Image (cartoon, rainbow, N blue to C red; front, side, top):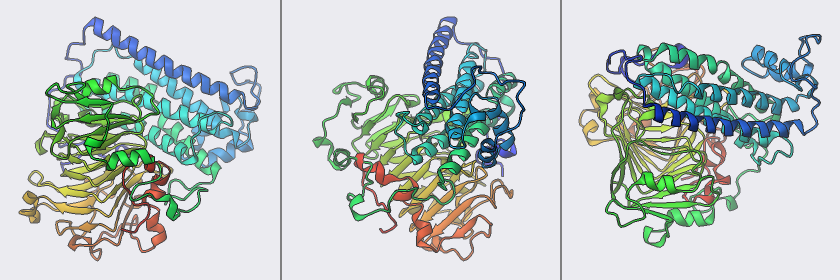
Length: 603
């Protein structure tokens, strides 16, 4: 079609809609030697710290009683034949040959039970990830053009996040490891790690021939088999614990929701204090940090506030951002900045904005006006905007990869790729999202509830697509659930909707999963409902697209697509699997954030 994002990576394509730019493989001068050396030192220290985390996790594994050989190298005199436990464990995976061969080479695997192979596979994969991060960070001195540097920097950040996720998962499955994560946590973290590796590859693919082939091939070699190893961990864990985390989710040994689990409209994982914070007027909240452009606060910029916020804090840090328009060049709440809550003066009053786009030799991941990966991120009463415009193609206003993230009473405004729900568990309530092409996209496990989703007038010859979900692995517990929302058209689209059809979504990756539950759909929605990826048959039999009891002129299902993966959901039991309580297990974490939510289907 010549519009939209990349072709799915499984198909090896790239967007043809991006503007042509000169091939600058190594044309730009590198940063100064001093800056480069400082960056290398920081990256080295970060990599070293994560390797040490991995080492401590390895020690925990070795303490639990799995017999290991004295030598770390396989004995060449032993037969290269998998044990029954290895064969059974690897038979559950999508890459069984890699699974068998990698375990045969790992200390302790030949004497391990099938249950022990869970943490052994985690341990092995964590070591591979740590090694890849360390070796990839050593490439920072190479001369790179801006687009290649953007993709490279993405990969470093994503690898760092993946090592952290695998370390948490490992300590959660090792008996006595002290991780404290539930089965749902482990599947979420593994799903996120797999998404991270996919995003790293996407960054190098979307630039096409403009990306330096040398850097791309070197990074690719260092990251070889990482996605497959993480996928195998996910399959082995899901198969061993007996939970169908991937298909239509199950409760996984938790009791069904009772009336006492629901506190107002908010999930139980929000504490009462945080529920009060989300419902209280700004005047009643004592902020830890106040941002004000006029100098009458703690800081003048949001960047300063983020920098001064504590790292790895279990306590909620409240940052109040007074009314104003803040353009601060890709703000980011990194993974170390946990439990930050941003409160504004209201939608359209406190505005975080930016104009970065892929037309500026950046990856899509790098264009976000605001990004958050620190767990426990909350935003309330503010606007996130990317003003790049439809002609600049991919331009993200808000990117969220934080686990247990909440966005409440916010606006997210852009055109193509407005809202990047990248990974982990997320909840949006009473928000407004505006866009054109693929404007809610990513691979989080995310529920939108009581939100208004507005399609805007796109460029000539374009079609609007609301979602582009990129679940690549059938064992990932990810997808987009749009529950009790309003699917509307902006006034400019309303006046010309006959020329610009709007679709509910299209499949970005093989196992794309999106459901619309009990939502109102305007007449701008095309009767077919859903759109193929660039007119191909890609993923039509592996995706999961569902609609349940939607209303409005666009909600009629009589002329919907007849794809094998599409279904009109008629079972309340099936529809309930995509609610806050069951899809993101929100009743265990939303109450502590204070946001209102509906745990089940009823509205």
